[in-house]
Every structure is written in C-alpha cells, then in structure tokens.
Image 1 (cartoon, rainbow, N blue to C red):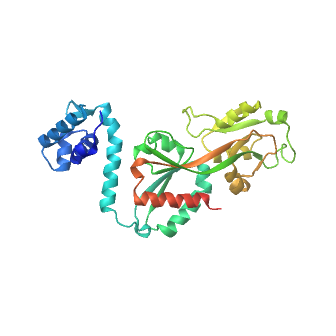
Image 2: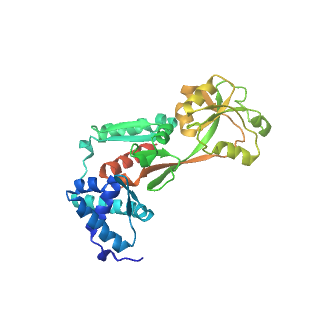
Image 3: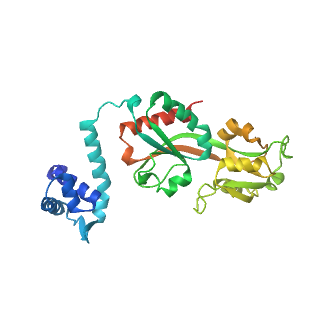
Length: 303
C-alpha cells in the first residue's frame, strides 16, 4: 500500500513509537500525558491508514506486528532528528560530563587508547572513558544493547549499525628474542614446522580464524598448540617458549621490545585486518557522540 506522508497525522507516528518503546498502551498514555483511550483511538486511525493491526494484546502488554517492527527504526530516527533540529544547542566539549564506552581489543588498548585518552584530557577534561574488550562487547549484547558507544576493530554486522573504515593493518609472525628461527630467512617447510599460539578473543564463539584461512589458502601447515584470549597473552607466552604467534604490526612496532618478541623473516601468507569504527544508529546524530568519534578517529590515525 502506497501512502502519501501528507495523508498521515504525524502525531499518530509519535503515538506508535511510544507504544512500541513502552510495550504498553497505559505506559504510553502516561508518557504522552493523554488517556489510554486516546492512545487506542490514535492506533485505530493509524491501523485504518496502513491496513495493518500494528500491535496485538498479550496479557497486560502488547506485541508489535512485523509491519510495526519494520516501521519502528525509521520512525525513531525521524523523531530523534526532528528533536535535535528543534532543540540542539552548540556542543561544548570542554563542558561535557558524559561517560563514553569504547570496545577495542587489547592490542588497541595498548597502542590507540593512550592517544585517545590524551586527546580527551585536553579537549573533554570532564568527560569519562570506559574501555572494554571484545569479549565484553559480545557479552553485553553488542552495540545495539546501549551499553557500548563505539567499537574499534573488525566491521560489525547487524541492523542499525554505521561504520567508518579507518586503516588497514598488517599482521606479523613473532618469536621470542633469541629464538633459533631469527636471523635467517625461513623456508616454507621450516615455517610449516613451527608451533603457534592462536588468539581467540571470545572463546566458545565460532568466529572465523582468518590467519588460519590465509595459511590454508597458501598451502602452508599451521599447527596451533595453544589458544589465548588476547594478543598480550600470546606475546607473553611466545616470550618464554619456542612457540610463535601472529600479532598486529602496530603492537609489535610499539611494544615488541617490551614483550621481548621479534618479527620472523619467513614467507608468511599475507594477512591484513581492516580496522573500522562502528556505532549504532541510536548515537548517530548525537553531538557528543559525534565529537567523541571524531576524537577517536584522530587518536587512531595519529602517527
């Protein structure tokens, strides 16, 4: 059914949005300061216009129809942007007291977060930063949960997500300082004889092993004898054993000496990681969130 926007009283969309958020006609009426019967009448008018029940009763609450669920994100975006257009005041970062939650792997916590923190202290001194790992991002319900504002890493998937590619990073194979494989160019056969530590940030989740896939495509054996949940744990294990691990180049460049690991000279299958900044639709137009994203962008891309 094709409907012209001029044929709809936009207040009806506000009513539907509130009912879907509250999952209750009574709570929606309290929020909008009208009677429950007024809410019901508005829903009836919208049902007639759209030719869909929109919501059905279940106990004391309501259940949205597929059509209502499909409309909900667009109505929510429209209402938020209208509110911002009507009421937005210039954002003053130096007066911001908001807490921002950033999800990033431990490698980024060591290389990017210190630069982000320095920028925040200079530009948003009263704001707060909470940093969580990728396992926490997953357990909290990803960006759609409302618990995390921004994710740095592999591009997220799901409805309502925005992403901005920031950089492409190589990975390096590393061994402990003094390892017999260092100081010479390894053959493919020698490379295939090494034993690896694999980084598995969210154990139990079937995330693709991109490094293993690169070795498989190149026809090179890769024997994984240990899995750890972080790059730093992998580096620590490598530093005290003859095992090797694949780590982000930025971590090796900035912290390799600290961990006493070095890059191995070998015909390693090329493997790069595209780092993106991901956020949810709910914060897309928020001035504070926009400023935070711009600050994070500068922190990550600073040389």
